[in-house]
Image 1 (spheres, rainbow, N blue to C red):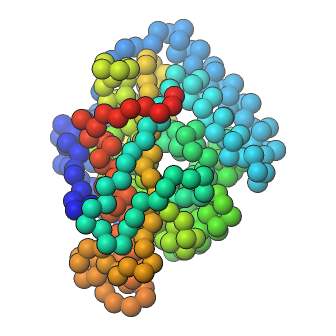
Image 2: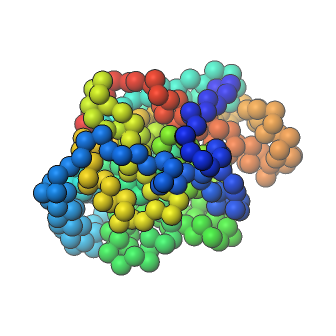
Image 3: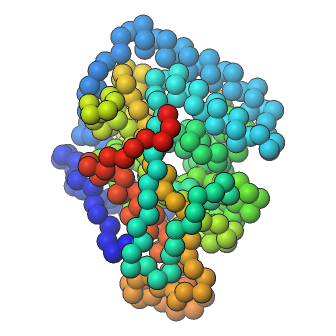
Length: 331
């Protein structure tokens, strides 16, 4: 892919782009006041109450299941069903679409045929709902921030669902996290990660950081880009929605109340074919890779990570463009 097409900038007072706080922790320019729009259709008080009650019931029902399924072979199926049920309780419908690969100009990357084998799933990050949407679409183990492991109920659900945890404030732990991801992939389990490192409102997205892509290289599995987009309404009346976004100083309660107050909320998931680097092809998909990474084995690994990150990011961006209408596969 010769270039990455940027998304239209969000009309906000903050500058577009991200200001990096550290290697691992970028900052999104998105904020609730600037990015979250009013809902197209509002759910009534009874519907909101019913959704909250339903979500609480699904959470309660999921606790004993999370304690039992552990590392059983049926964990992925159980988590997928529970995630779909929880999303439906909140009034969110999941629609899966199929993307296509366009890797023109790439001498070392190729798309692989669709199969049921393990893959590193990488997607854009909009909301705390993203891991649930991903799990509801493709059986996988999500990569979650370490803070989640400190929330009593959520910790039990996440651990039972096979979540892997990363401490985003401690860059020194990243090699261990990547090794854990590679081990899971090697056992035949897909792993879902969000390489932007932070959330965006959905009208913009950040660049994919290459670190997590090393897990796919170590395990010898493809990278499967997945684009997530929320819309309100159906058919020609559907419009992009920023209401599920979880950005800036937003709180989980405020985000949850926005979601249950929105009618006809749809999570669109565009799944692209897996991408794999050719082992025999020359390293350095782009001349900038070699200049940026230097020479030697370490630099070649860095160039491979950077190449996969750039390809996956470009694929995801194509699905988020306003005119990227695609036929739905399943709902």
